[in-house]
Length: 408
Ligand code: PMP
Image (tube, rainbow, N blue to C red):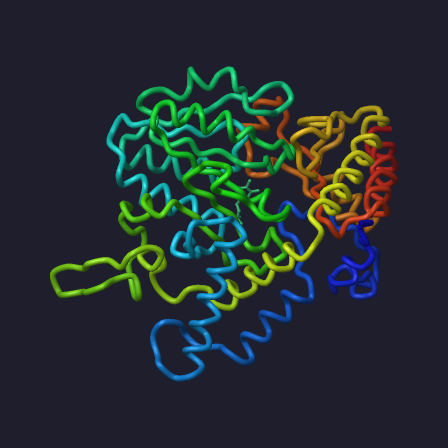
């Protein structure tokens, strides 16, 4: 079936240039993706018909809100193929989900135990482990990257040793689009009895995830990068593992009993959701998951591969441009970073903005990876399924002009 990108685009009100009085080629989806009408409608419907707090009051609005929240959890469980909805913890985002693991799983670790991440990570999958190391005497180690910007699998036996308790790695790089070889990682972790966390922030927009097939233990992602609202994210965790973890935040609705002396905690996922959760946001994230599921996945994938090839081909023909990361289409998602000799990424982004091309320039919260590549920053185009050939051509034409202006 042909992929009808015009029909997809029409579902995103913000992509209409008339809304801005100027062209818009939105290629900053790795930072935040836009919301389709179906998601906007789901949020508005919830806020205008079912808004109330959840799990507290017995009036009909509270019951409707609770049901909507529970259904959102069911939808997210289906999206990642969880064993049950109780394995889905709603958080404020991917960062909060990883921090939750760093605190609650981290509380089970002893001084000298090791946590392994990689040079590819977003800071949100590095800093919480540095903080844990300070707090608990846990030792952190990093898997190095190859010249192409992929995990150096040859280094796994050296880095993942007998004291390793957790391997926490990105599923897809937010800088290079490289997809992690999860099977190799899981095998290396299992060989020493370590658990595996995948940061799925950049993978989640590209179709349902099968955590059972991946064989991992935790999976973290954000709503706003998968066509949903911000302020919401998911931590999926294996049921038996969540059950062993103490809570991170304390407060309302995560207890079974509180006396003046002590608290006993509810079962997961409530144990990890202290206070009023982001309810409409959860409803919106679930609507986004259903919207993604409604799209022909194979056709969407082929469409994005074609656009990525068009972009890589165009960049390949430009003098002074160096692609940072894989230059082929194998095991990659539609995120492409590049450096331009003699031009700063911020200047490139600013000049392309004049053409309506929205990009991101800088270190992308991945300073260790920038250091590994010997750059301080890159310019990044990150694509979503509503992008079309016109967006890529606008980027390439604008970049060509910009390079001539900046490096003349
Ligand atoms: N991990 C990766 C790979 C990301 O790209 C991002 C967002 N740029 C995050 C984690 C953090 O996500 P959030 O800011 O939504 O918590």
